[in-house]
Length: 287
Image 1 (cartoon, rainbow, N blue to C red):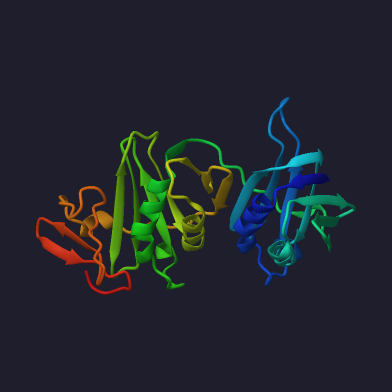
Image 2: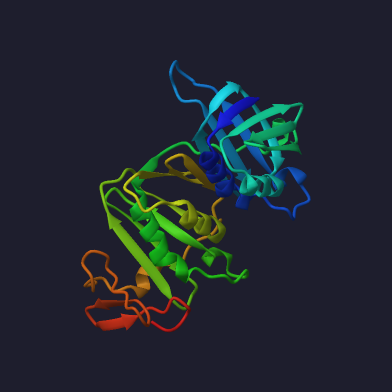
């Protein structure tokens, strides 16, 4: 394995994936990041470096451009690699021989002992139907509802966010049993589907998704979010989400037609409906 890569591209890839690798694990391979140098699949096509981090429940992959002289793969310690990347200035030359990774940038040179790429856990494949919405919409759907998720271990069904879509809309719902938040985006989508996404994956999604018009693709078997050159994959929560429609009025008049939310500089977000105005306290107060 041998390649050249721009400084910022490599830093972005490592920083996006390092949080998935755990230093507190009985499986040493889970404290590693998988680096894969991939040559162009077609003539004049892009040469790429793919970096993957996983904790078995959630996986983040990011693909960045690189000049690949020799294809290959290796897993390296995530924490050490992140620390090295933070000190390097300049474009990098990376080579691997017998699981020993060498990095050069300017006057700096580093070596890391890795593990065989074959030992790294396989990443689940998510096939079947998919839906696509703008990333900035997905970012807002998550932001407007994730604060209501429960953090009580005994209520694992509520420790996540419900994504549900039909041919005409997609909604996200979060609740901890005392408060409930629902957000809706109207759009022409594919076949109906739903997924109950764990809070760890929701928080990682909120960190990775951009505020741009680029598409975000959602696939289910596991749940997978494709965000440009970044892919987040997670297991789903196995359980039945509460019937949230029982506590939401049938007709809602939005305080702000563009967002359905009126956020004040001080105090809580507020929403108006046919029966008056109610305050939503992100810290768990009454509605």
